[in-house]
Length: 283
Ligand SMILES: C[S@@+](CC[C@H](N)C(=O)[O-])C[C@H]1O[C@@H](n2cnc3c(N)ncnc32)[C@H](O)[C@@H]1O
Image (cartoon, rainbow, N blue to C red; front, side, top):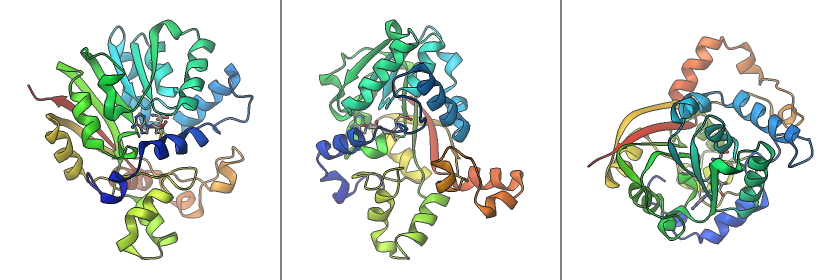
């Protein structure tokens, strides 16, 4: 299920691209007309309300005046925030539909001069982006969706200088979400876990590639690409009732409603879905 999987390795990148073109990540985060400032403002507000650990992890103000290479920018929520805080961003994305929306977003906020958008597959990054050092290499929720994450990391390593930080979020195997998928959909068929986790990992059903990792596995994968882990933590359990959530209402499921906040946070930090890793290159 982790760094290598014959099932996921055999998936053509075109299938991954099609999946994200059919429904770009977070595209339904606002009911306002797509491409307007109101739409993008709402997308951002919802994303950081539901995933407040993202600004904490990305630490946008820290990258003012620095060069950021973002992989899998999606519709550009974090991209815009890096640029807004004064970074110079190269944002790479496989789904051209997502990329178009992210580009429009940069125009809407007048940030297009700070962001270079590139369409491409991270596994062949050097075919699309010239090899130059970046201060931050950032990829949130992306590398577990590419068929060969180890190829992606080997590519990323070429863009690192001795002070570079790599910040990635990958999905966490020992998580509430995996437990829930195995219980609800796999109905205990643990030997098919990989298939069920991928199918139900995203807002839309049927992701063709979704790896999950333990702390040990991601550390080993990074080490193979000559990165050493500096910090690693787990966060994020989604507590809301889906029928309300899709109507833009935030009503927690009953057991989370009654759970004290401190206990919920304890659970999130132990069994969250997001494994947030900061690593540095080995020279
Ligand atoms: C879960 S979304 C995350 C988007 C964005 N990082 C965010 O947090 O909103 C995953 C994104 O990774 C992109 N992606 C998947 N495989 C990729 C690859 N091989 N190269 C570049 N982008 C890829 C998808 O197109 C999709 O937009």
